[in-house]
Image 1 (cartoon, one colour):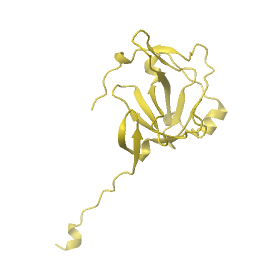
Image 2 (spheres, rainbow, N blue to C red):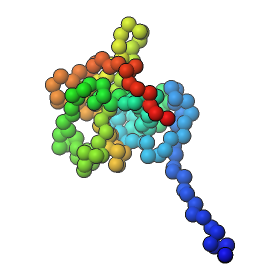
Image 3 (cartoon, helix red, strand yellow):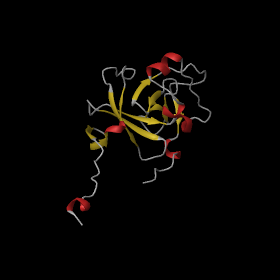
Image 4 (cartoon, one colour):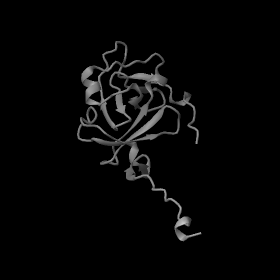
Length: 164
């Protein structure tokens, strides 16, 4: 057997991005978890690069800014938080997100945590975040669907723990 026959194919590690987060600490995340927000988020327009990371419970995610350790959001799957939730994207929104297939779309809502235990966490179902998982771009959109509120109560404790 020749030496060439003993060479095993090398697996190339997936590229990672180093992140410093006030909430999550020092992380190395897959580059595939990074999304570009051309318009930022409402009130955070200057932050355009975020990593989307799973949280400890199913249906919850962290959205961590790559440029500021202090800018991190808790997101929830609005279809889990509010059964019957729907989102209708217009032609302009679909074009700006380069959506070609419904399989590309991930919709999440920003969670506001209560200051004390006397109030519930709420989710902004009026302004969900729509992500294109294929090309990794995202926008926060304003829902035209009647009934979606900015402060929809959500029970985060009812969500099951994420499987390891």
